[in-house]
Image (tube, rainbow, N blue to C red; front, side, top):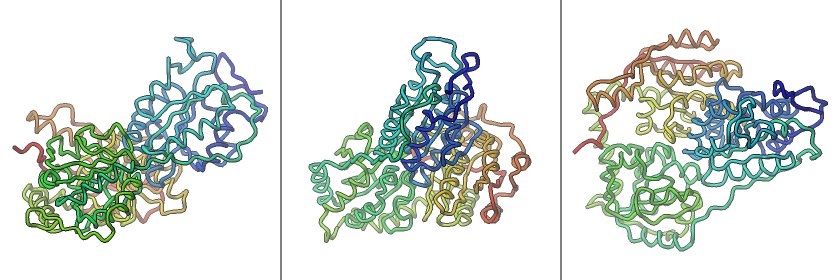
Length: 564
């Protein structure tokens, strides 16, 4: 029998009997899990011991927050559920910022955290190692739901339910915690042979589709905003068809980047923060908003004042009409767009009129105005830098961007082509790019797909995840990490100078990133901005992880929401 030494909270020698940890591993494998991210911890040792008897691949990060980012990146890159194992107390709490990003962006994850032994639960302060008054309450703000499992027989069903909830729209992370002795004690429950988790159906209401179609049939200036929910709902095909029938200009939010072909004649691309685009959207007589709250960035920092009617589609009911009144349709974006597309008259020949211009002419003219505005701002270095990265990155490569000036540019200018663009704009925390890229590369290789991905960070954000160079080296993960080193928190520096005339507390002492990477055994190179393209191409041809460092100060384009 396995028991716990009350003096150390460590498990005593076991007998080889199956226990609660085995049930966790068996259920996850039955649901299709292949990889787990996390860090071992004393109360969670039953989980990790059980993995040694199973087939799950384990990727050990160096900080729990980065484990959460890695599970997030794994899910985004593969379309599968990310799985995260956490230990009690400090380990669990350290993951929360990473889980906030997954929750805000709608990334399906199953999080299994250990707990103190059952006899300590509910005690205000029993003095057990890592004890919290209510651990799962700490996760309540960053996960869809939280479950405490007190008996081993409940483990398979609880994990199956959590998996179902994670993949049901609105998708997101689900939290399960299991006490140490429930993981360690022998069980009578037979091995898990199968587990089925199917996403709950989330179709649009028929009367709402009918009303939306009526509005669209009457529209003379329809336009579409494609948010992150469009991608999560795999609605790209329906979006393309619907936009074609309506001849509606389409703009993608940062989260929706890639939902609509970049060079399509109706594509306003992703220049959502430019006033020229805001003007177009305000002028639409019917605006279809898919998988977006019309929040801070999408509304050009709440300067957006639409004059037409809004049809808003989102799987999360709390999002509907949260910023603007409209016809709210709570539904999975894929199901809703397919229903709208099917209901529109198939042979419909749209005759939109944007004050004497065709939609195609409007799109071309609007993009030309944005280009002219940028070219008037002494941004040649920045435009070339981003263009050089885009030219170097293979068309099908996935990219992961931290909250850094290059990423802020990427939100607007990055053509994801056949790859996918991922950033931390859901919650906006630092440190996302590199660990998420590690998870993505692991996932792609697990599925037998080309695994090389690109992570982009600033020097400030890179320090949040610098320890994951050890993870990348240990697992020989094919990640190229581009670090743009400007000696501080560059975007905050710009904000403070613009607002107050000077920057305070934005300058950073930082390491020699090349020497630091090499100390981890990871090849690294430093290049001038004009050499970034060639350096990236060389790094993509290499094996395992590598780092490219560019020391340069990038500027942002002028904010148009501040114009009078």
